[in-house]
Structure formats: C-alpha cells, structure tokens
Length: 314
Image (cartoon, rainbow, N blue to C red; front, side):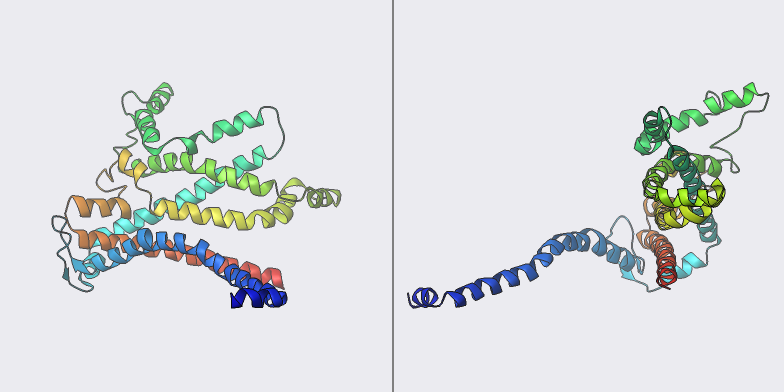
C-alpha cells in the first residue's frame, strides 16, 4: 500500500524503475538466444569430441567401451609408427585436394555460364542441381550401375569406341579417380549455386566501365569479377575441403576402401579399425588426426581472411 501510494505520488520514480527493468531485460535477451544453441553444441558436439580425444589416449575395446585403460600417447606412437597410416593420410589429402580443385573449378565454370541470360536457363540450372539434390545412397547405387564392368554404361561407351573394358572400381589405378568423378558430380552443383549468387552481386556498372575503357572479357573477369567473388570462392573451397576430409558414404558404398586400400581415407579406416578390429582407442586416434586436418584447413582460411582485410584497410 505504501509503495503504491509512493509511486502514484512520484510518477517519475515509477517510470525510471520500469525503464531500468526494461534495460536489464534487453541486456539479458541476447543470452537467452545464445544459451540453447550453446547447450546443444556442448552436449552433442563438444562433449563427444572431448570423449573421442580421451578415448584416443586409452586402450578401449568395442566389446566393453566403458572399461578403458589410460595409456597416454601409446595409440599415437603406434599410429605414427605404422607405414599404413601415411598411405591413408596421402590418399585422404589427394582425394580432398583434388575434390576441391575439380569441384570448385567445374562449379565456377558452370556458374559463369549460367550468369548470363539465355533461353531455358532455369531448366538447365534445375538439371545441374540434380547431383547435389540426390541422396548419397541413391547416387551410389546409380554410379555402381554406371561403373559396372560388364553392363555399365561407361564400359558400353568404351567398348563401342574399340577400347578394352575398364575396371572402374576394382582396379587400384582407377578406383580413386572414379570416386573423385562421383564426388565432383555431387559437389560442383553446390559450388555453382553459391558462386552464382556471388556473381549476381557483382556491380554491373563497374564491369561496363571496364569494357568502355577497352578491357576484354578475360581482363574484366580478372580485374573486377574475381576480386569481388574471391571471399565466397575461399569460403566454398574451405567447405568442400572439410566435407572431403570427413566424407564416408560415397567412398564406403562404392569401394569400401578397396581395392587393397587404394581408396581408404582416414574416415573409412576409422570405421575399419573400430568395427572390424574392435579397437576404439586406435580408431579415436584416427578421428583426432582427421579433426586436426580440418582445423588446419580452417586456420589457413582464417589467415587468408585476415590478410585480405589488412590489404583492404590500407
């Protein structure tokens, strides 16, 4: 009663109190939005990652994952002392780098072609996005038929040209290039979509001014278009690289890591060690190496960003 009478007598004090409460709520509101995703990431991402790092320092069998023996860096000593690990690492890097180079190049060329108006552009764009939209399992089944040594369409074309049949997925020389072909088929549409959005944001008046000054198409691309889309190009390259390092479905469904380990990347090897050798500690060590690779790629991307921002600020 006393407070109500006081507030009625001094309305300015009441207004000041409401303003202070509103200001306090406004300060707390961002935390209310941040806490749920932070809790989600903590429970479903950072905790499993921390658990994986811990398992990599233990001797843990798949049959009894809750009984671990801490062995420190023992798994890493075995890993780095095993020549097979370096073969797996070389295959992973080769596959990831080639997926970035070929996937981004094909996607960028397709985006440049679709960035100009022509009849049926919407239909062509929809068809080109097909590879990205198809689920990996369905895509693998289609490509298993295409690569089939006896009845596949690729060998039908090859034999019609008078050449010998090719063992696309069962030859140590052809298995990795065949998987790269499927990867580019899947990745390039995504790159095309992102780069097309970036290309459409390039100011037309700047390109027209360059043409008026006598620049040809290649010079306009190098001097105007490329600097404008470069941040997007770097970002999409980072995404493709990280996805390639951790890609499992297409590789496992097409070759299972074979023949003779010629397509065994870190993630495929991780599955083999965990579920065929029943060694969760060693498989976690493989996973930590893959995580470090992805973090190194992200760090390089961040360095490029910082360097570009410094150049732009001069």
